Amino acid sequence: MLTQFVDYVDSFYGQNDPIYPMMSRETKQPLTKVDILRASHNYLKMCQDDTNKFCTWGDGDSLDRERVRDILLEDYNYKFVGE
Image 1 (cartoon, rainbow, N blue to C red):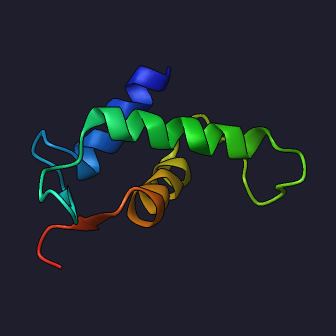
Image 2: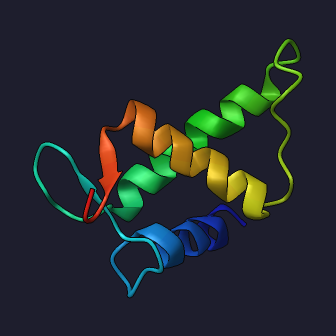
Image 3: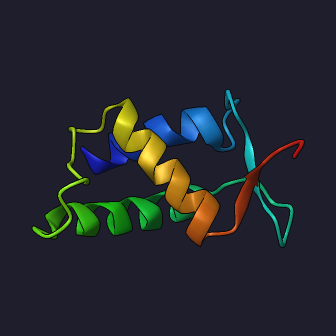
């Protein structure tokens, strides 16, 4: 299931003809599936924290994708291409 979610996020922001391509602010390289997977693990860890009432795993829905996107932008130093 996590592999499908990574592919889903990649289809929006990654390297395989994304709708909203992202790249590293530092290296200018496109978003990698490895970083998507890492950010997804961070997100899932946040969702397992019972004190974090604003984080719930929605089985890989669009809200999950957007929250992982936000982690990539804030914690992994990515940006949208063209910014």
